[in-house]
View 1 (spheres, one colour):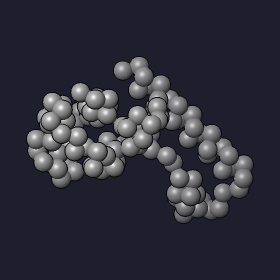
View 2 (cartoon, one colour):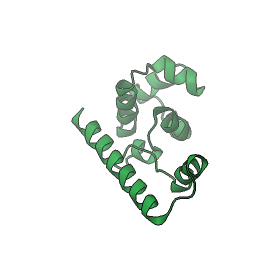
View 3 (cartoon, one colour):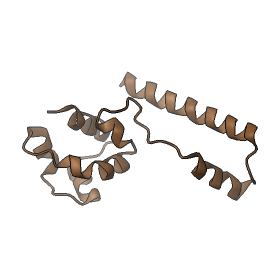
View 4 (cartoon, helix red, strand yellow):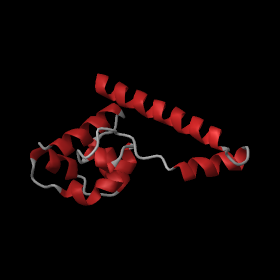
Length: 115
């Protein structure tokens, strides 16, 4: 079993997601996960973005290109949400928010390493 499949299965286990649930929810063949486990196919490659989104991780993490499981945070999205509720971010607020997100990402990464 290759490393990508191991990461997919690990993420599924941490979220209590069954093979059947994953395949149904992302719309792929119901035997796909079994086929990945046995090495029969590597069809996960063409679905990697859907799988990553569903599992709440980055495709780079699943493919082994990053040790950070969390998808990148687009500060533009954070700014839009903040401005919708409070108003424009000043530079100090933006810096603070980025540091909070960085700390959160680091905690998630460390928690994942403990399991």
